[in-house]
Image (cartoon, rainbow, N blue to C red; front, top):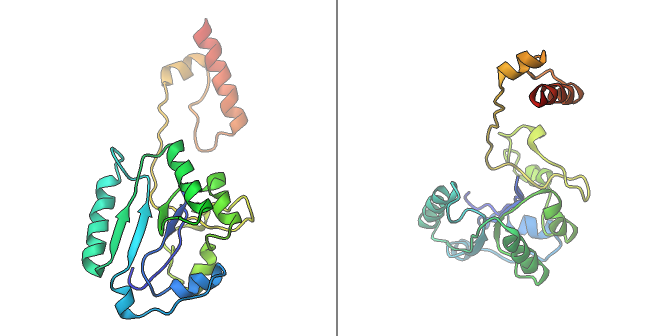
Length: 203
């Protein structure tokens, strides 16, 4: 994270501005004039951060741990305004962007929730960052990137993943005379299986 200013929108949207070295690069990309930077100026940067990692969220403790570590290692200051993941949070973020008071660091939702940021030119594509920093997000499969509905560009990278499991009542499948769905099962076949099981349950 040394001397890097980068923008992320992340399964959520993520804009991550973390340092000074890339600041001029990104400012040029989003159409504003770069400011002169120096080691002295970078040594006391103050960032406003807003995330959904707050309260009972499982990532909150980890997030706070790395905020403290980042401040200790860099001397920079992070003002954290994290809140719960609800509609009030979304409206607050959108309002901040509309009035020009957007946070420096924002972990947010991708998809249509991020469209206003993309349309306003507030973020840069992942590929643009990778032109300057080839290793950026190189540990992620390209299939994990979700293109924006605005222009088809990719502005978001995943910050974590999780598994979902499907529990199957094999006895019901046997009574309905159907196979347990697998990776090769098509959507139409799955709907047929569900209907046949429903008929058995109704008897």
